[in-house]
Image (cartoon, rainbow, N blue to C red; front, top):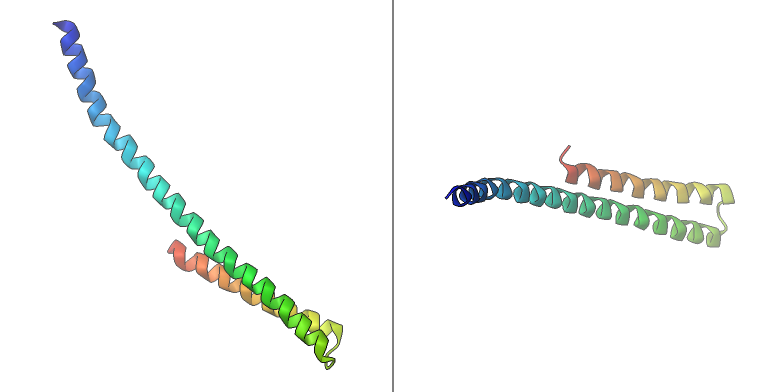
Length: 96
């Protein structure tokens, strides 16, 4: 009789505890997934800025109108724009 009561009490306690633990893990997993997506979008934006910078520098070098230093500066500006876009994406998606 005591064993049956203990088993019932244990089952009741486990039933009350288990949903709370599972629920917390699910919310954490969702937040983690959202942060990964946010970082991925920002990373893609920065990579796009790098590619744009390379293209801008190549086009500048082909033109012969500007010095190498001016072409480097154009590339830096393109890359910086990509970084700023990445920051904005992370900032907008994080909700801060």
